[in-house]
Image (cartoon, rainbow, N blue to C red; front, side, top):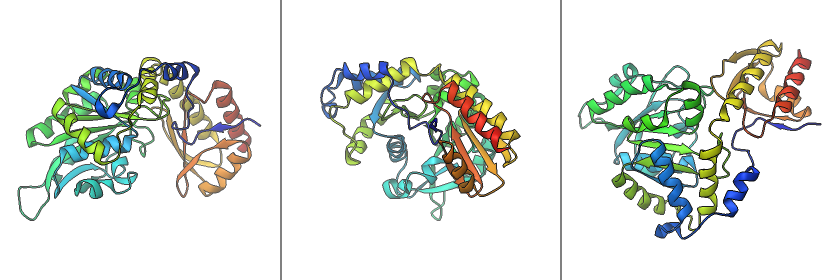
Length: 338
């Protein structure tokens, strides 16, 4: 029986080319700034997004939490959508690490607008926390891979500048968004104070994210990373995988998006599926007639792994380890359910 893992794009294994790049990495002690492969990755990612500098970290959660720490002070408040990863899936780190409260908005598929944000910016008043940061997520995980275009980002950035707020991007699947919208990474640096770029999802690296900002912010970020235990010493083996991913795995994301469209089409015809959220990128969210766990059990019996995100909602994630013949197999299984 064929096994197809659609749980997440974090389950990928390094390709042969990536393994070779890792094996040949030039390493040193990154905490001393002496790991050549880490330095190369940080410089490469910063240049790609038009930012001054970067810092390599073990995870996107760490880069996001470092960014929040850099851009806020205790007793501040940040604004984000109510589905935001920084709020739902980072273990309460906003409060624990930064002593910051969160103002949550109800965007469409996780996309928030200046019209939503501006009324939630607190006036200067001793009774209120000081609003200091807005966080966007691209793509939006809980929105089924929904994307901000640069034209949607620009007015949010303009509002933040006018109000004196910092703007951070949780770029968990930023390259999926760029492939979908056709926008250029280099333009993002004009609008964001910080960007978190994840390498271990659609790009297929085994570990790691890079936080990008200006030189002074990254200097402070290194102090915060140290406190959080993120100094990885000879991290060049991992950084080399990230550099390889940036060089070789961005354009191929189009394949994952195409595969998502195929499976979404089959799901929409399946009698056991009540609705499908139209995919923009590599994520598909769909609702089931019976409880999600019962449908997952049927999939598991056919060798298909997936995750429930609610009592009647399931997520499929396409990635570089899901090949055309596996997509065809899953399509056949879904047809058999009808």
